[in-house]
Length: 336
Image 1: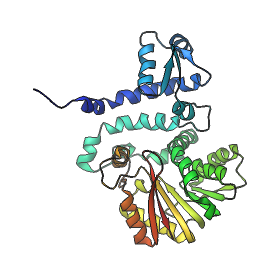
Image 2: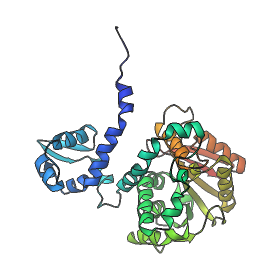
Image 3: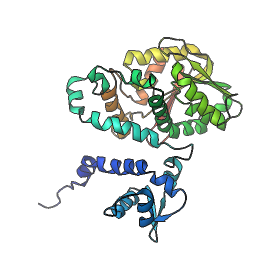
């Protein structure tokens, strides 16, 4: 057969798990943090990480091919992205998100076909358990979960701090704040602002420790509340990051109404997620995140920017717009 189509793309998708496991192994070994001290050859890396000699070069060169490491004259070093995001000694480390959630989702995604047939979650709920009850009752598990949320939020948080017109406002509220990654990034970039993090009471000591490590306790405080049961505190800007996709359509509207009620006149609501592109063809991260919500939640799903703008209009926002933050994340801004 002449001019037959290539199977390369199909194989790349089918075996994508291999590349992610290479990354997770490197994180588990602390490879990127080790290389932050300077370039090393393969033998030095093998000795420091206590690895077997058989496949060390294949492992390291796979990371080069994945553009997570660089190799020059036989010495391996971090790429700029790996140095910034995967060195656990830096406050910009996001590896906790990958290591925690990958350990859970790999197994649960094996039941994706069942989830698609039944419409039911395939996580702890399937066994009659509740993930968040278990997390919030165990301080060490909660600490790891909150750190993973910081890793998940950091790239978008830095973009929001940089791109949103914060000079127009004085106060902000971050709903579902976890450790306070977003408030910290905003406060570091805009010295005139004061803010609040809003989350369940068990989160407070971890939030205060994280915010305090940046010397920002005088400008950022914690509000211990449940965002479905309690009214939101008033603010000029309210942020909901990776919150709405956990909930059903009606629950999404309920949260948007609460945000609208709490905003000052002329204030802004920022919703950021792995938004599905309006044509539903390009942002695979958003579509896969929505399938993750099928596996992880009772009624959650991701959505497009057009969907969110429509909901904002329905609850009363007079105008809205969508702006891309990273290659895979975007924000929808609604103005009251």
